[in-house]
Image 1 (tube, one colour):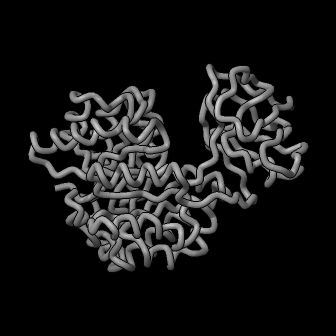
Image 2: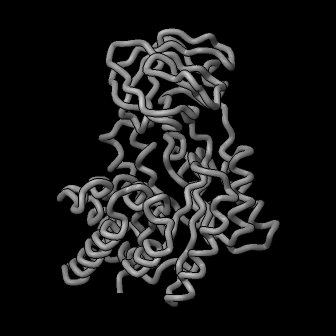
Length: 365
């Protein structure tokens, strides 16, 4: 039996009954519902259908509700615009929707960003694929930040924004998160993932909400901010599981430091006997191709050998062309890696890592 748990994000490519059933049969242990997209009420039916399919096939399946967190995002606009290197672009802060968005002006949901950015600051869009440098900022909320495009590319609505080195004054769980949390708990989520955790204090609203309802729902701390690495011990002491969220982490810290951070998080979690999920771009190629790269196969295997008890698929299953094949591929890699670990002469510390939570988490998955 495969011990490594597979987490699959459910989205437009996978939210119909036929595909959901195929995902569960292919080896999905945890269905992740991303509350960053859509309204909470739109997920009510999805909870019900996952539970129904779970009963039909007799396979325990956890539901993970991933809260939006204080993630900066562009506002809504139509179409795709291509930002050109060396050109200027204006970021209109505090704008939810911009009818006349273009490669010269874009909306930003968070009004306070124009108060916090200053000349020379970097601004990264779309997981760091597009890089801007601030030329001017008004120093007050709701203003226009003018930037120079250093690395261009296509940009679409609601893409993420990262501002490395700038302290953004947003709570870990804001009004949108509170609505998502309430909906998730009322709908029967097994796991709550708190995004952009910076300290143990950021976990408290979720812990309190679960306690008030007298539920046994797990709290997962997503490590994707440099401050979380500095407060890792206190964060782990206040959650049930941890996620290495490499997408934003790889934008907030230098890319070459991500593997070191991943190992540190895994080691720290396993010392406490705590499950740890490694996430982001594990089979990114399979969003458009039927087969992974050798590097992706090695990445999954390495995470498991390091001691990860779970591995996660994001866009691969949410919006990719090959959601079921992605799960099947991940399951084969995990099983092969586990067999290799069992048959090889492991060092004692590696053997100890591999045995931690080998039976899965206590939240049924």
